[in-house]
Image (cartoon, rainbow, N blue to C red; front, side):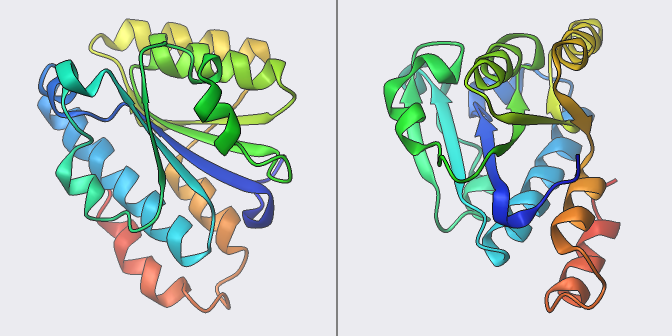
Amino acid sequence: MIALKNKSQLVLVDMQEKLASVMPKEVINKITKRCELLFTVAQKLEIPTIITEQYPQGLGQTLPSIKAFVSEASYIEKKVFACTDDAIFNRYLIRTKPQVFLTGMETHICILQTALGLLKAGKEVYVIEDAVVSRNILNKQNALGRLKSAGCIITNVESVVFEWLGSSENPIFKEIAPLIKNID
């Protein structure tokens, strides 16, 4: 399946200050840049976005650098690991947008449980592997294997961006192209 901008919804799961501080620094910096790119493209293409925060009183807010790239998103505070177990999250899922793209942390906990819940709800789930993280790389790899076996599409930032754009003739292509070079 190919990512289609008119069928897509982008979700950032729990990219919060205290969680980020325990992730490998070089990894979190790269993932943050990739999420910034995804949100920039999503906003320019009018792809709806959801941002979740797991118990923000204890884990902090969404990383300020990411918030700076997000002008419109539905923010959801939650205490459950599977976003799909949260009634507010489910209200923000758009029925006419069957493709849900997951980014954030941690891959083996909230990303995994949310993806499985979305599959159960009949969504096409895309896990953007270079925009998700776990403290332990083995946990991330295990989760990605489980998600692929369960029917998720494991993809990457560049593939998603270019599929959403569809063509170099897209009006925002020239604006986005330099940003893509800065994500590694």
